[in-house]
Image (cartoon, rainbow, N blue to C red; front, side):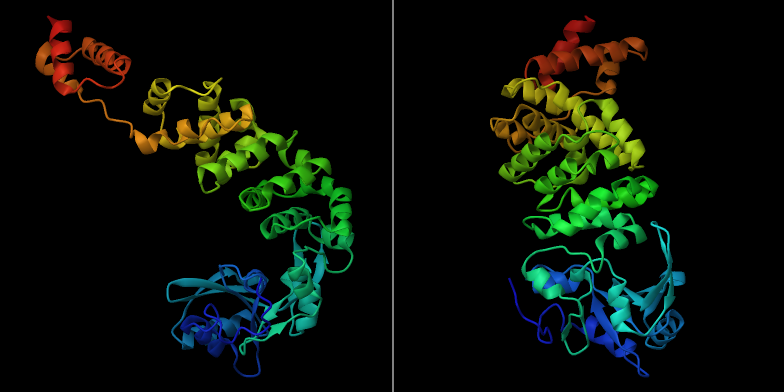
Length: 407
């Protein structure tokens, strides 16, 4: 872990884009700082993702200065103080310092400010109150660096009060814990999350789903969802129990297979045993049609695999479904079964790319002499024979078979 407290010479910091943004924002007595997750990840020595900035300048001033510098702006959430600046093709959110005026557990009403300490106090966790100024200095008003070093997610101030301000902070608490691969959850934070769990029902499905998409693919997802289940939080999110043991086995199988985690198959392992489960969870969280379809397809494939399939059976299944559905389904079946003998079946697409059926309706028409419902029936019969022969017959053999059928 990096313990560096000044990033002036760091590769991620000393880029033309970052230096240009600071030059544009740090004018006329205003100050800008890189804030939040990027600072946390830099201290951990991790890859830096999006760079977000906070500034004492109001949004209209940010827009004016960016325009004068030839930088494109997007009013991402300008009423809340956020403007996106596009530099070298990358978007960077710039948000004016804020103070809470009113909170209702879902969204806060804020006013713009110039007090860095006040802005830090209104944030959710100590690790998100860290900031880096234009000289690369880390500012830590609330002990966030110690929490980063300890890989600990700790609420700023009273945890119950912070959760009451925005119930989504419950899910953010667990998501950040999973992303840090932390050890034990902060006791005060966990207790507050359990006490406030029913408030999750007040949140929009979209906001809940957004957090779950990130949580379930995080490095520490398995122990984190187990803690959420034990605390009664996961049932509130899913509308039913979570299959946390299956989820943990799915994560281990993915690691053994070397597959990058994806939200839809992981949500399937956590929340669904049958297609109706997947449909219900997808509707509850307002998941995309693509996510819902992927979940349903994985369950359909896994449902056909009561045991590890032999190569011939696996080839038939892979030919019939898409590779993604096949691999998702095999991984899910392995997680259900709880053994490690499924890797060969999962890796089948690497050894055997599913072939395309060599004939078309035109081939049948050329022999049968004219269109009609019989053409489709003949084509299906030929394909069934080809599959039964384990995909070995080539186009010539299939045409010979066709001649026999129509003779």
